[in-house]
Image 1 (spheres, helix red, strand yellow):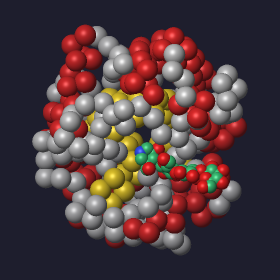
Image 2 (cartoon, protein in one colour):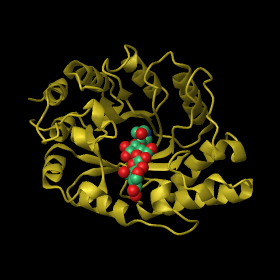
Image 3 (cartoon, protein in one colour):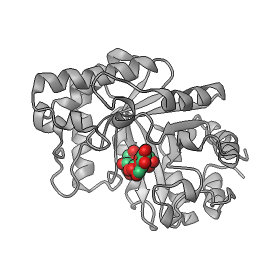
Image 4 (spheres, rainbow, N blue to C red):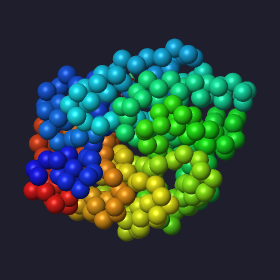
Length: 303
Ligand code: G3I
């Protein structure tokens, strides 16, 4: 096939992009979006600071716009994200009472997941909970500090009861290199969840890479997570300077792992990227395909 989404679909996978509601009026942007991609992730619109800015008062306009637009065009939607220490409103960050925080967290999860029940193929239930560096432990956050490490399990159980049909993912960055302590920490978490029957269906590897692309062990990491009985997804791919070989290596690793079910790039044109200075995406500022686009399409067997 000659587009990313159609070619990915030939092996039962999806190829998605992050979408910003504020760009949906840009015709160059939406033309590429609807031609190339069969999955979308809201770049910011489903985050806590966008959906529940004050306690119990929910805003869904921009998120609904993204979800309804995508479903109307046959694109799937990834939900991003329910529990994250960043883009968290100050009122949540300042809760010190465990009972209060527990009910606030569960109410937030239940409200979002129920609103989009049946419409989300995968939810990033917990995002970036592990610390950088060599500890392999959870990072400090209001959730860990007030609720303890059990907040992860509680979040996944709440999400499952609100929408039993959505796949539930743990999503993080810098977990692509197998030997890194952070990767090992996430691996132990998933293994423990599977052993104890805590609901988890997928691991999202963000894949924000430098110009060298994925580490040599990337495919091993994908296979090792998959061997625990979860799907793996590349959820936020972008690569500094977008070298074609770096994109091809990333995509090939996913194609080589049966349970790697889809790839999402974190934006459409370089000008849409959170790292726009590094030109990390598949389309240039004019919306033209870059060499990395061709490399990505061919790595999936398309042309
Ligand atoms: O919406 C406000 C606007 O009202 C305000 O005037 C403006 C002034 O700065 O800021 C706007 O919010 C910005 C928001 O993007 C929407 O454009 C925030 O400042 C800015 O920090 C935010 O950045 C986002 C970032 O997450 C926040 O952490 C990026 O767009 C988004 O690409 C990025 O995505 C994250 C993933 O969710 C998780 N993994 C890492 C990835 C990259 O950081």
